[in-house]
Amino acid sequence: MNLPNLLALLRLLAAPVMFALLVERDNTLFAGIDSSWLDYAVAFLFVLASVTDFFDGYIAREFDKITVLGQILDPLADKMLMLAGFLGLMLLHRADAWAIYLILTRGLFVTGLRVSAASRGLDVSASFAGKLKTVVQMFAVGFLLMRWPGGTPLLWAAVVITLYSGWEYLREFFKSM
Image 1 (tube, rainbow, N blue to C red):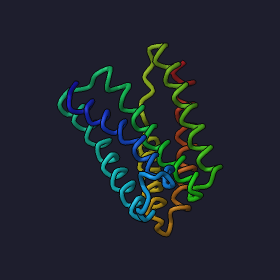
Image 2: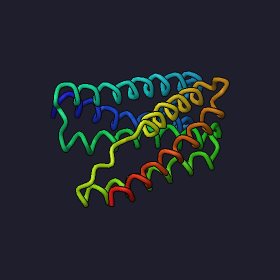
Image 3: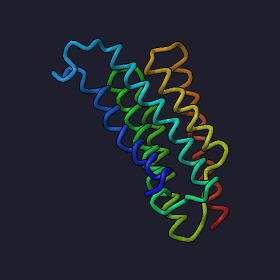
Image 4: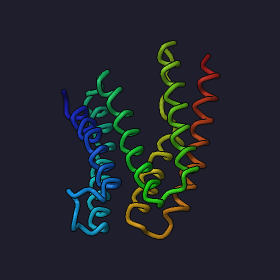
C-alpha cells in the first residue's frame, strides 16, 4: 500500500459516507441538523475527495508508484464518488434523471470497452476529453450540491462531454483492433 493507493482508498470510503449524508436526511442520526449543513458537509467531503483524485495520479506518475492495485482502485473510487454524488442529487431532485442515466450508462460502456481492450493487451488511456469530462462532472456535482446558479447547465455540459469522450473511446478501441 503506497500513498497514491491510500488516497484512492480514502476516496472509495468517502463515497458511501457522502451518499448517506445526501439520502439519509430523515434518519434520526441527522435529526435536528439543517439540510444546508448536510449539503456543506457533503460538498466539503466531495471537494476533498476530488482533490485526492488529482494527487494520487500525480504522485503515482511522478514518483513511479503506479501499481496494479492503483490501476483498479483509482477508476473504481472515481466512479463510486461520482455515482454517490449524482444518485444522491437525483434522489434530492436536484439533478435530471436523464442526465444521470446518460452519464452512468456511458461510464459502464467505457468500463466494458477498457476491460475488453485490457484482455487483448491494448491500452485505452484517458483522452483529453475524458479528463475534461471528469472535471466538468466534478464542477457540476459541486454546483448542484451547493445549489449555486449554473449547476444544471454544467450538468448538461458534462453530459455532452461525457458522451463525446465515450465516442472517442469507442473510436480508439476499434482503431486499435
